Image 1 (cartoon, rainbow, N blue to C red):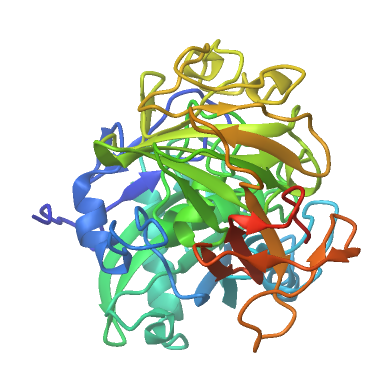
Image 2: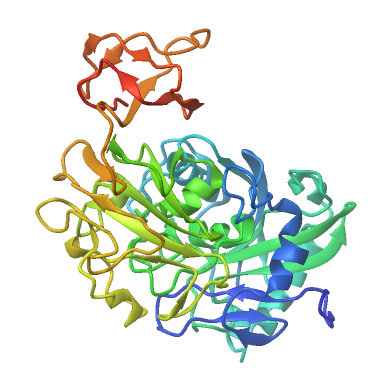
Length: 474
């Protein structure tokens, strides 16, 4: 049931963790440990997929092309440092680059989604706030932020058609942002960057989730992209998670790491191979091309997921590389403590250091990853130990691709996974076999029992015959 609403919007504040180790979510003026169930049911439920569907459906899925509105504001004591045109480029320009941002906000989400999600923001402003910035910052909570939001909505209402930003036509907008000149001053109050819910009717639609972000001394990526994760996708803050997701630690403003691979797979941005308790197979994977999922046979909302991460490009701030293992439990709402985490990294060294400290350390470490010269197995007999019968073993060294085995029985000859590019849309299956360098090395014959799936521009095939080893090209 929707809680009572005493003002024109309910504050649902998800705070960026950058100056404190205290995790805060504010709902209806009260601090809570995690997103309340009402948020998913009332605010985000209309955008959520069924948990029985593929992709996973644990978090809301927006339209592949989503349009948002950004209203910009400055103050008598904090004038705008950037022009409206500069803000538009920072948000939308393909190939944008500056000292403060490697790519635009659009570039960031387009890249990490493998081209499956495009975000475009219409920019309006500047508005000069009625009060100096110091007035809005001098607040015990977010009441002055609410005042500024109300001001800006009233000012821009005559020139903005808010119905445009109801992208899926369900009666509620998905992306409304307020970006102000200068930097957030007081953590957890005033104008500190946050996400919330407006719940006000305009142009025939309900104004839904919003984000408030600062411009800082330079137009960086972390803050706005982090708050967009809350606003559009409903992702929680990943405290006790280290540097492995933009929803976690603030590891870099200009080149933040991607959204973690569990959230990406949940959106359908990266293909998934599901491993069952009876599977015995060998797999080879290149960085960013596939995630592997093992579901608890007794509870489909609990699972392990792993993928191959190289510390290059968006991951360049990480201190390690190899197979990274995640554990997810949807019976837990968010990450509220080191011992109550919906999603966390299974640290290969078994020390569970991320559960001990929230921020900024530990961030990442080479010992978080699985690879042959450090930890080549994750099973019920290792430390850390796996649950539900999962065994990953014979994990290879880190190279251009990595190989690993799953299961407790004998792996069939040529058992494994091969990714081949879709070169002709009319082909029912690939006809040529290539190595990692893109060189043609023969022909592939698929057995009648082979599983074939076309995803992300690749054919994914199991049980290849006449193939000496599994390969991947990209």
